[in-house]
Amino acid sequence: VQVIEAKFEKTATRREEWPEPPLPEFAFVGRSNVGKSSMLNALARQKKLARVSNTPGRTQALQFFLVTEVPSKAAAREVIRFCDLPGYGYAKVSKSERDRWARMIEDYLRVREPLRAVVLIVDGRHPPSESDRDALAFLRSTGRDVLVAATKLDKLARNRRLHAVREIERELELPQGSAVPFSAVEGTGTDALWARLVELARG
Ligand code: GDP
Image 1 (cartoon, rainbow, N blue to C red):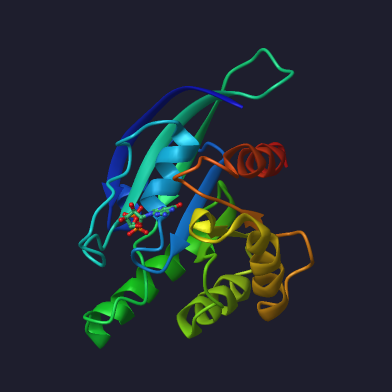
Image 2 (image 1 turned 135 degrees about the vertical axis):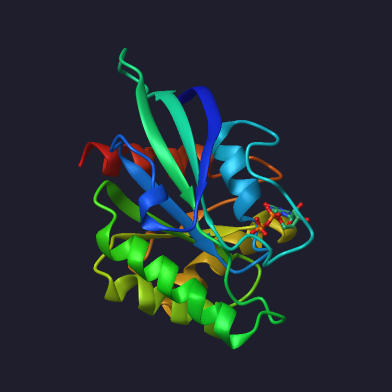
């Protein structure tokens, strides 16, 4: 996939603010600080599309991005939309804030018509956390397609990476080979993830 243009579109906290027109859409979610912004930037082939920050848990809104790409072996350009969901599992967030997070995300996941799949980002260095498991169960309960991507794999020795991803698949009861190995630092996994998104976008 070749990305021609990627730009921030808008922020939304209420349903009325969700952008039109309908375009194939993918949502990205993960624990705060997992590397979600870095993954979005890597996919968009930009350095600063989504913010990379050291202050996790701040953004309590949906952020929409428009990405214009040309799939390989096709001439026509296609525009797809990314939705950056606020991160979860940030310890300092109060229960009422967590409830608000859940309500907003649940509303979006249940009714957002053009949403094709949700990318759940986990830290490839560690076994899935309890909040990762909760998030996956929650995403599945909405009936959405979920793609798991394991990021920060550059922090593991090369000969440990595949094993780490298989372990994560096993612990999350995912089919072997279904999780996408990723590293925003090395740029690995972007083509594989794009291939899955394009496939899903075409339906
Ligand atoms: P977010 O809070 O999930 O959006 O995470 P960010 O993208 O802001 O990244 C959080 C921290 O992890 C930052 O210090 C990033 O530089 C770092 N990071 C993100 N992705 C990777 C990766 O693939 N490899 C490594 N080594 N660090 C990463």
